[in-house]
Image 1 (cartoon, each protein chain N blue to C red):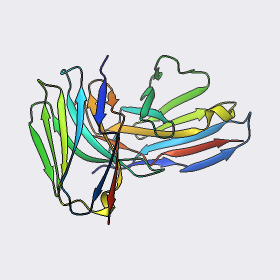
Image 2: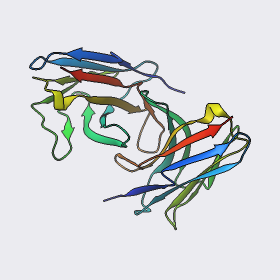
Image 3: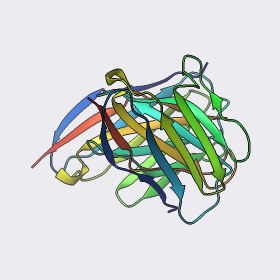
Image 4: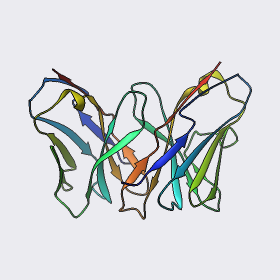
Amino acid sequence: GAVVSQHPSWVICKSGTSVKIECRSLDFQATTMFWYRQFPKQSLMLMATSNEGSKATYEQGVEKDKFLINHASLTLSTLTVTSAHPEDSSFYICSARVGGFYTEAFFGQGTRLTVV
Amino acid sequence: KQEVTQIPAALSVPEGENLVLNCSFTDSAIYNLQWFRQDPGKGLTSLLLIQSSQREQTSGRLNASLDKSSGRSTLYIAASQPGDSATYLCAATGNQFYFGTGTSLTVIP
């Protein structure tokens, strides 16, 4: 299947700093990528939909100024957690479809963010 | 809003047993139904995708079925192995993915 690569796989940062997470589609172009957050023993919560060349669409309750999303190319989307705080510690996962709504989605390996 | 439920939340079986994981969804207007596996601390691995016009898909020891009219999908795992131990998630897809709460499977050697 197609490959979605997420980097880094884990990161520890100090409170107040910003962290950038990259999501790349390695062997296909993705006009749309999705960013999720997952709390321990819970399912995935959609944070935002990242659209190449335009602004991301954020889900209700997700702070767009806190979680900056940039979809700079058809193979790269980035999530920047700004002014991180301990409550932002979580598992973040991105995904991309190989085509339209009927096509299969592939997920990155996730990024474990710990804010100390 | 689409709601996806998975039953059971946890399942423990002896190696070699056949098992069924259940997924139900409230809105039948879906594009497809996708099953995933998630190992602890890892991302999601796609197992099977059933498009809305299909009834089932098979891959190796895995078989997934879809009944849109009743809002149900099942994942059948034959001859379970310890390596199958993981959390299994289903997702009903429309414009976005609606994930179930997952079934944590433990296969005991």
